[in-house]
Length: 225
Image (cartoon, helix red, strand yellow):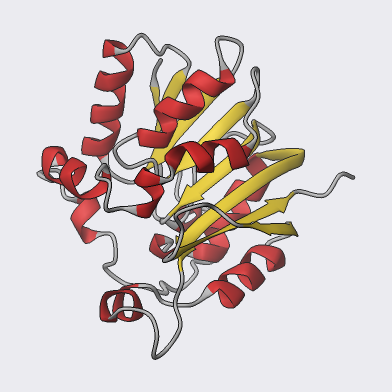
């Protein structure tokens, strides 16, 4: 188990304009308190925590797969994917937050999960090696992509042909969604889906997850050559 850091796309290409300036300021703060985030993220009132077993089953992670948990946060799904992928598989826990990644490494060591690599990503790149993953997972994090085109391009490069991507995010509908969602999540499902398809991935399906009322689950795939 080890850590790698991403190279920003802004160092190698014409920079993309931020779509949500400052949206990640809390997470890039080196003094962020992970214990406080655990109380927000790993609680039964949060749909993606309460429905985690159903989400894991729908992800279809199999032994030996190489998985990327993009925006891994407290590492809840990283740990679940680690068990599902098994000793012959591997999980990249990708996040912009050093405190989150430190927490993930500590928990992995405590629980004997040696098939996890933490990746400190840039705000415009996943930092993953080319053709390195069979499955990518973005849970309540896509709306935090400040530079979605650049980040998606790096992710598509990292996906093997035929690899799949699952995106879970908040339902955003004017007049129906909460004020928090309307102010925090920049766009709804249709726009996010179009952005992902424009990056080169094929839309596969929308999956109904028991317990989901505020979130949706979309599956995409990288076309075979």
